[in-house]
Length: 115
Length: 115
Figure 1 (tube, one colour):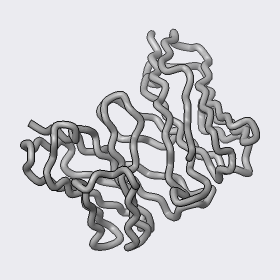
Figure 2: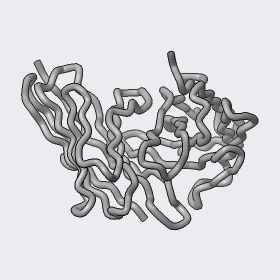
Figure 3: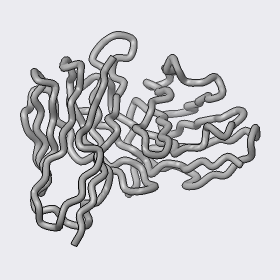
Figure 4: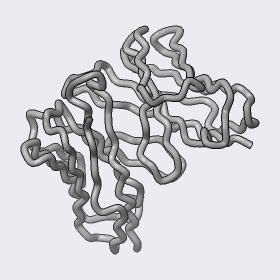
C-alpha cells in the first residue's frame, strides 16, 4: 500500500555522470517535494512543485533540476554529480501548502553513492 | 526564517521508561507542526501532526503537545520498547515570506531503547 514510491532504492553513479531519481505517488496530492539528507543531518528542501508550478530554493545548486510531467510523477535530475552530492534523496507529497491539516508523506528515499 | 532545535541530540533508556523529546522553533506563527520517525537508511514516517489550533495530539503510546506562544513542542513516549529505537525529527513550516510553507526540520533525537 505504498503511497509515495521512490526508485531506485539505491543508486550508484560515477563522478560527473548524469543521474535521474524518480518518485511516484498514489495520493493525488498537489504538492511534491525533493529533500536532500546527508549523513546525520536534517533533511534540506531542494525544491517543490505545486501542481505544475516549480519552486526552487535559493541555495539549491544549478546542478539539480526537477521535472513533473503529471500529478503522479516527479523526477530529480543531477546533471553532473560530485562527491558532495552523495546523500539520501527523499521525495514527499502533501495535499496543499499552508494548511494545518495537510501533513507531508515521505517515500523511503533513494541512497545515492558517487564514485 | 524558521529555525528548529531538538534536545537532546541522543537519548539511551532502558525498556519501559517514559520519555520526553523536546523541540523548539523560532517563528511561532505556524499553522502546524509535524513529528516524524526515521529508521536507519529509511525515509521519514509521519507520527503526529498538530494543527495550530490544537494543544495535543495522541496516537497510541505517543503524545505530542504544542505551545505556540513559547515556541515549543514535546513528544512523549510512554512505556518505551526496543522497537521505538530510531531518530525522531520535528518539523515546523515557515509561516510567511518567500519561503512560506517550507518545512524546516530539526537535527533529530537519536533514541535507543535497550532491553
